Length: 249
Image (cartoon, rainbow, N blue to C red):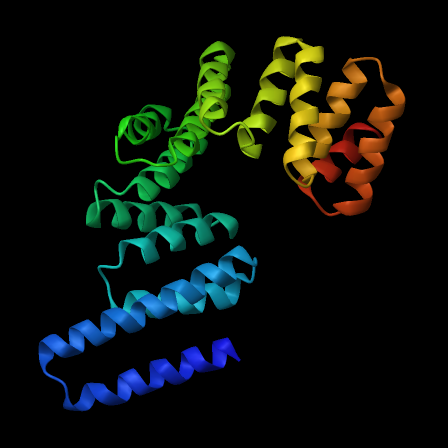
């Protein structure tokens, strides 16, 4: 019913445009674009990507200066593995709002994942240092991930710790601390972060795989097996499940 009402509202707004001035039309189009943007983000969060794409594209057609719509399109394109399109949308968002923290965080993370660590880190560092950033742990965690990709575990750990000092239950940082300590061979410390992670959020395919590795490396074969079974049962089509099956043929 709420979705139906939103579309009624959109249709009513568009109908009024016939008798509005040029400035009024721009204001109305901007408001309508925001409605489609919000719908697009909602469907994106529900992983209904085609419907999300339609709404975000419509938002951009109505308002081609809607930086957050471009930002969301970048995230969507990443999910669809359309790397060039994602880059273009993130760059458009950054050009429109060079100081936007959400854009810096998403684009910086994206660039690091594409092997452009120097440029990605520059965006993330500015986001962590911005006094207006009320959620700096997001950029700190992504910055740590950049260092992880370079196998610079000490630097990565520093940023993950900083993120957790600000938000002790931030699940992505807890997951990364499991990884970094596993890589360092500190399996008991990794298990501490594993316990904190399981208390903070629901498991993902990625978290179950690293949990099985940590327990296996700690000599707890039974717990490792339990995590492996959960991985294969809850996420049978995931990349992590396929990776596990390939290694354990």
